[in-house]
Length: 394
Ligand code: PLP
Image (cartoon, rainbow, N blue to C red; front, side):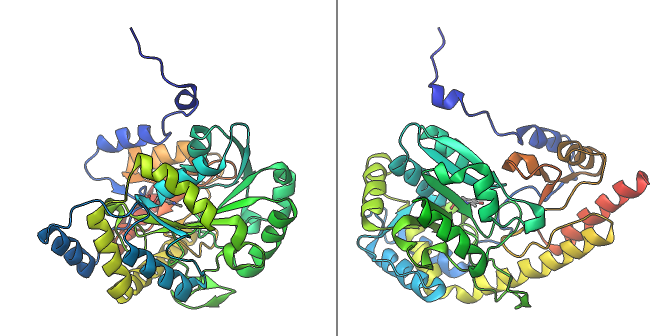
């Protein structure tokens, strides 16, 4: 007998990059620029706070929505850093990673048959999340000539005016694109005009390096679409501690949204998760209270690496768009190759692992996602190997 799986699960194919991991395992000298996670460890103060909480036996559940103190700290942080004003009692929920928050939002807001427009290329979990919630995905491909920013033209061309929800991720995984306030304004207007609910994944907000052409050397300030007129009431903002605070394994994120939406998300969360990991909540509280300098140091490092990687790709003759956020860049593969062929060839021949852009949806074809959440020495070596690969073919 075989147990029948649900149609929703069957509708989602396994991740396309698994094959690459298998190839990578065949060599022991692989440099991975494939993963989207910081190479830094969690700042010590946050780790100490987690350890202390364990030593003190603070291992019970917390309030469903997360420790009040943490929600207050998140509210202060969001207000100070991004001008986002949310009530810690009603409008903030702490989750097991931003991933859980995204899933809760889909399940709370999507009815079977609802259409969810997703600006692509984008983080790989949105599409499956929509399918698991019973919705229909409408890809909205962004274009390199627009610096992978979402425009009203592309929204209209994709038919997004008929959608119910719109998912945005800026700074973007996988392109490294950012959207400035002036880029967000027309999108906000489109959302208001067509009554779209916006899900805005801002997990890379701290990793914004340049805004409005002024090279601020890791001082760029992210703008949230929720701060634009008439948007707060129709937007769910996701953020978390995985990226800027290097806390991926601690699994802590949160959502900011109007009270009824957070209430609905919490209804699912309380029956499925109860509360986000308690130890991680102590670490996160400390991270917000005392780790700004550490975050800044990491962001400075990413920025140095970003500049290096962009200039090296150009030097070796590969076109690459000027990524200004997150820790990815998105070079074009040379003519005559598909992204998958190129990624497989550099992995087999040179032991450099990157991810083909098509994995991230429409608009990603012909590109590679290259993560620079890796030390400069390894980046130097990896780019040297890619250069050698290209020279062999000249
Ligand atoms: N959102 C984006 C855009 C991401 O790139 C990732 C991880 O790569 C996540 C969410 C998941 O974050 P978390 O570790 O908080 O679940």
